[in-house]
Amino acid sequence: MTVGTTGVQALRPNAMRKSLMFENLSSTQTIYLDNVKSQAITTGTAGIRLRPGDAVSLHLAWDGKQQIVDEWSAIADAADGTLAIFETYD
Image 1 (cartoon, rainbow, N blue to C red):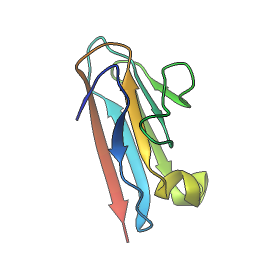
Image 2 (image 1 turned 45 degrees about the vertical axis):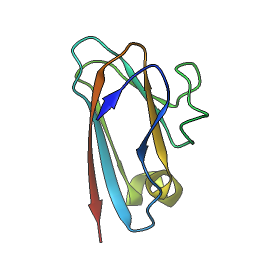
Image 3 (image 1 turned 135 degrees about the vertical axis):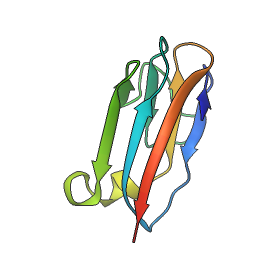
Image 4 (image 1 turned 30 degrees about the vertical axis):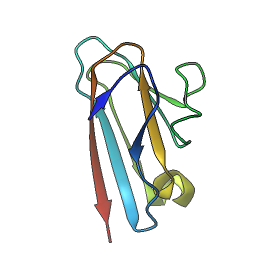
């Protein structure tokens, strides 16, 4: 998905989700993630920062149910960031 300087919904809430992974495919943009609504995310308050090429994975067993099933939003420090998202379910 493309991420710019305005917050966007990366994932809808889903109680069936068991794990997820985010990967920043951008060559220059930093992408910020948090489990908040897209209107609330900023580059200064987001909980996860992915520099170009970085990835993060979250799993129900290690990171808790709320982190996994919640809505996730993304914002970038410049236009046209590229974020890959992988999810697993029951």
